[in-house]
Length: 108
Image (cartoon, rainbow, N blue to C red):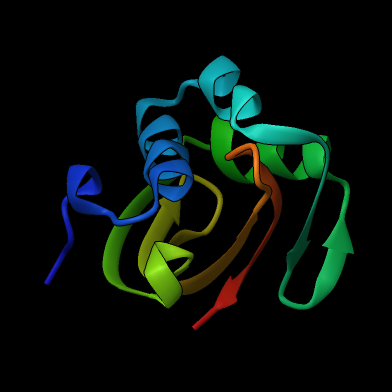
């Protein structure tokens, strides 16, 4: 069962999913702390390069199936033009100012 984006618990994560699905790169970047980091399948990645390739140039889209840890851990069906659809897990760390300082993703 998919959770509507507007119903996601954590405001930063809700905005992240909304920006991905709207293909709103500027909105997405505004959600991240200046020194934000990320990992994919356990490997550190260059944030700008990864989001270009995996989200914006390949039309990424998230459908959230499950959330836990106050909305900061998600299981979602993620699809893009490069890889098709896969079941993924997402973990978010959100700073006190509400900016996402780190996210990690990988196959679930």
